[in-house]
Amino acid sequence: MSDAPPDRNSLPYRDCVGIAVFNAHGNVFFGHRKSAGDPDQSAAHGSAWQMPQGGIDKGEDPLGAALRELHEETNITSVSLLAEAPEWIYYDLPDDVLGKAWEGKYRGQRQRWFAFAFTGDEAEIDVAEPAGGKHPAEFNAWRWEKLNRAPSLIVPFKRPAYEKVVEAFRDIPQRFTHV
Picture 1: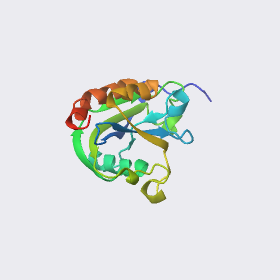
Picture 2: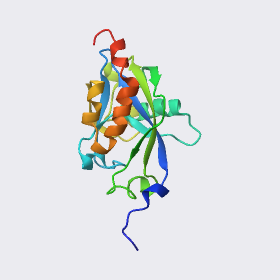
Picture 3: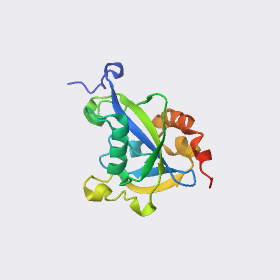
Picture 4: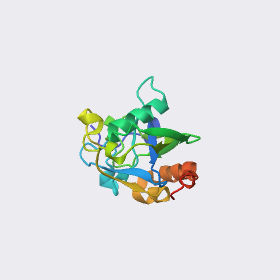
């Protein structure tokens, strides 16, 4: 039995969504990943801060997946759609995780990104027991942050993807009157 990693080019990308939730001040939601059970081992590769994201279930449309994942990870349901990134955004897993994350089935993710305005009260946000505890917590803390800081907060291997997210949604913070 070989310990060699699988051939990266033979593996597909996992279809996922990413969610940028903007508050009334034009800042975006970031959650701090719990290290245990982290599918792409973000905490092992540096910063564990990221925006909500998750897989698209078979037969599910990306917008529906984004709303579901947002609720499952943050408890947030009070949002209105602001924008959708114009194209899929990709990232590859680092070599040391390839063949281990997601049961070794994928080389990385192909993400459809959505931007939402948060229209609720911050009391709605619950990363410790999202959806009333129906889903396991993926974050152990959260905060609002400037969108342009996103690439510096994410693990290095996801930075090019987050740079594309910033580019796709760069005009959104200016829409808010309290910026």
